[in-house]
Length: 461
Image (cartoon, rainbow, N blue to C red; front, side, top):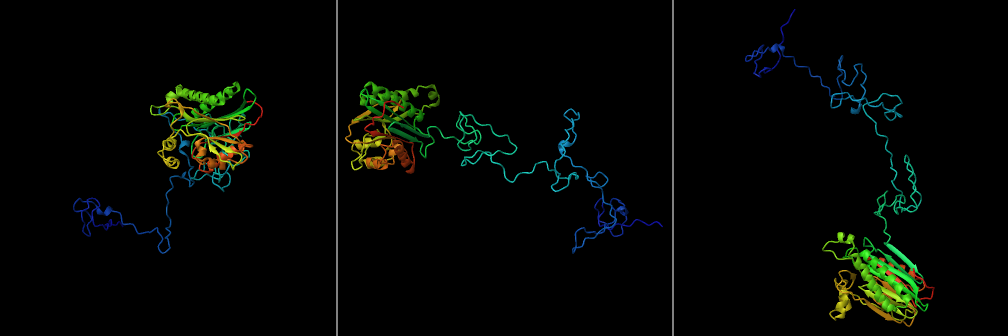
C-alpha cells in the first residue's frame, strides 16, 4: 500500500521563507511542495553525557582521503618528491633516489617499519656543541672536533692568536678564527741596554700606546762611558701621535749616540738631538698619507720629548713639553730633585706668580702644553741643563703617565725601588706598575739611568 508523503514539521517555507500554517502541503506563496522536505534527523550526540558515549551500529564510515582505498595509509611525500613541470610545461627530471635509511624513521621503531606522517630529516642534535676554539686560559693543544679535519699548523713566521691559540692573525691585527683583536707590539715595550732600561705601557684607559723611547750606551772620545735615554709622548689631539713619538725618539737617540763619540759636548749634543727630532716630526706632516687623512680642523703630528745623558761626572737633560726628569740619590736621607720645568699652562701660571703650584695643577687647564715638537708648533725652544751630582743615584726620565701618580720629587723617590741603580729594568717595571695601580689613565713610559755611568764597554743598542 502506498502512503502519502508526510508533511515536514516546518514553520517557514524552505524556498521563500513564507510563514506556513499547520497542515499545509504546499506553500501558499510560491507553491513549493512541502512533502519533499526531509524529516528532521534524530538527536544522536557524539559527546559523552554523564561519561557514556552511544555506540552507533552498522555505520558505513567513508574512506579517508589519504588512504589507498584498501584501508592502508597512503605514503607521505615531500613537495620536492612530487613530479612537476618547468616553465615550458615539460616534465622535470625525476629526483635522484634517496639513500636507504641507516636508522628507523621513528625512534624506537624496528628497521623496515612503514613510514608515518612525521619526517625526521634532521639528524639528532647533540646535547652540547663543541667549541670553535679552546678556552684561552688553557695552554694545551686544542682537541680535535669530530667530523672535521685537523687545522693545519701555522707557519713559524705567522702570529698565533693569544686568545684561542689556534687561529692566524691577519694583517689588521685580528684572529681569523675567533676575531679577537691582538695586542699591538707597542702596547707594552721593555728594553735593557747595559746599565740602563726603559719600560712603556699602554695603560688602562687608552686604546693604544702613543709613547715611545730610545735608550743606548756609547763611549766618549776618552773612552769614558755615556748612557742615553729619550722618552717621547704623542699629543693625543694631533694626527698620528704614535708615529710622531716614534720618529722623534729614534731621531734624537741616533743623533746623541752619533755625536757623543765624536767629542760633541753632551749639552750641545742634546740640543742638536731635539732639533733632529723636531725635523723628523715635521716631515710626517708632508707625507701623502697624512695629507689624505688629515682634515682641516686637525693638527699636524706632534709629541713632547725629554732626554738625559749620563757620563762619569756629568748629567745633562733636555726637554720640550711636560715630560720630566727626576734625580733620586742612592742615599735616601738626602733630598731628591726635579730637574725639568714643564712647558704647560700650569707652569706658566706659577712662573708668572698668578697661582701657587697646588692651585695651578688643580685647574682643568693644568696639562695644556705650551711647547711641543710638530709642524704647527709656534716656535721651537729646546731646553737643556747640565748638573754635576756629588753622590751616586738614579735618573728617572718619564712621561706624565707616571708623574701624575708621583708628582713631587719626594713622591717619586718613594716609588723608586732602593736597588733601582743595580736593577734598572726591575725598577722601571715597578714604576710602571705604580702608575697602573694608581689608575693607569694615560700611557706610561719610564727610563732609569744610574749615575755615574758604570764603565761597562762601549757600544750602543
